[in-house]
Amino acid sequence: MQIRMDWRAVKFDWNKARAFLVTAEEGSLSAAARALGMAQPTLGRQVDGLEKELGIVLFERVGRGLTLTPSGLELLDHVRAMGEAAGRVSLAALGQSQALEGTICISASETYATVLLPPLIARLRQEEPGIQVEIVVANHASDLRRREADIAIRNFRPTEPDLIARKLGEAQAVLYATPDYIARLGNPRAPADLQRADFISMDHSDTMRKGLNQLGLGLTEANFPLLTESFLVMWELVRQGAAIGVLDAHIGDADPLVRRVLPDLEPLVFPIWLVAHRELTTSRRIRRVYEFLAEGLKRR
Image (cartoon, rainbow, N blue to C red; front, side, top):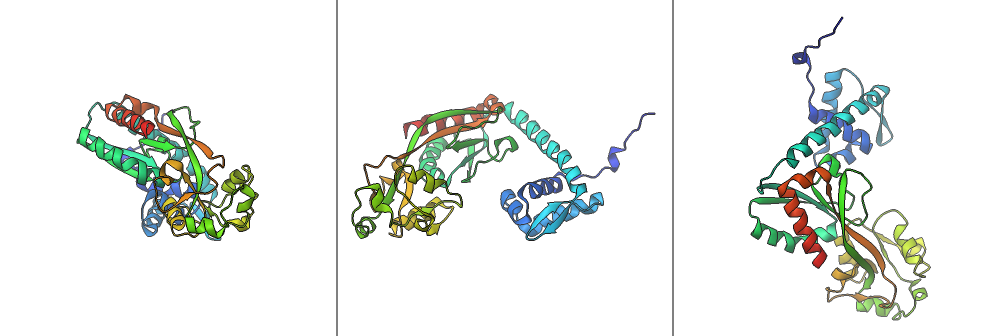
């Protein structure tokens, strides 16, 4: 016997399903709202609406976070598959576009989005006025497969097989501080002379301290009394003489208010990659912007 489903009776709102998916992956409504760029109450209403439509409870509160119920766990794989399929449809449709008109979404860290991209985008708009540009400022890696961006500038090589990447070169990260702050440290000449200095950390991990200690600085957690995830905030703290910061030498050397700390110290070296989804290379618009950014960033 063949069972036929009346699809007219099926009511399923993808926006609500997406709200559920991102909330499950982020672990809380607040984190999911930030990831989706919407207000937390709006997101909560979408999740509640999906629960009412399906007649099941999807989440249980555990402390300040959420955990999936057995019903939520069972639904998660199906919704995740729907999201991946929707992304493939969107990518395939965009890949067939040969028009140079339309929107391009570029993801970059706060530093690159503020300093490197603006002059390039200004020139791109002169050469291709039909292309509108959206810049996503993200210090984390945007998910290109889910269309969080069309093109991304990253400091690591992607491992996903459906992403293409071009290495544009390598950047050098250097220690910077104001001349007054360096003088207060006694004008240090060797890495060990910085053990009394304050540094600004960019995240809760220990990556920066470990990297600097490999250069012989011998720093402890006490050397990092300041923390911010914003490169702009970090740099302004450096410019105000609050502590030592680490930044791309191309950017730091151009600021007249600061100078290098221990100029002969070996820099921290990291690669610069330009990344896009493989299917996007069949789009004339995406390909035009990708090649334009590759040429411009490599020159800079």
